[in-house]
Image (cartoon, rainbow, N blue to C red):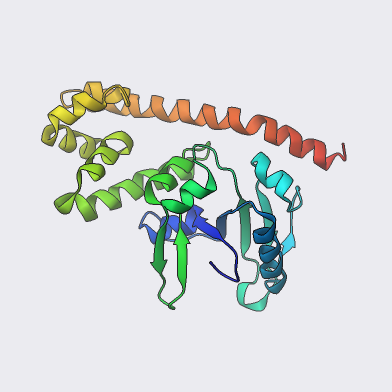
Length: 234
């Protein structure tokens, strides 16, 4: 926690910490949606000289509906840094569950920060945005390369269910034929492994992505409609 605010770092900054990105201009946080915690956040934003830059305003009502609230910092040490705040996330569990699964990291300057767990980060990255799918692929590649020689059964299951790199999926399929059979109901494209062509595997990965993008569009549709009504003062 920073300044008494209970939150989880997510988004691009979390991708950097997990090795799936090199740069991010924004700071995205998942916030515990309680009024006392929101009051502490208000104080922290005041110190950062942060200005609300879009609708809606920061309130529990909008956070609990799933809206994101956007700020731009004017403090000299954080000039123009954007802070995006959410409490309810698509493809994610409640904040309390996310908190229980969090990863706590120490940064180079000694700051301790609570980061959304690696599997939860991958789940919430399944959006409409091209860059998020690139992040997912790089995140899992980095995790696989770092842990393949010392992997746990949980790691292997996660990679088989979430990896988006054909070479990794093929290798895991050859190494874990029984597990492939077990997980086929959870991920349809595993039925193709290990003997499918590269074109077939790419097509299956593309279809997965297409379905997830459409689910994200459907999720955001009523929220975007409400934002437009707020802008129009309805």
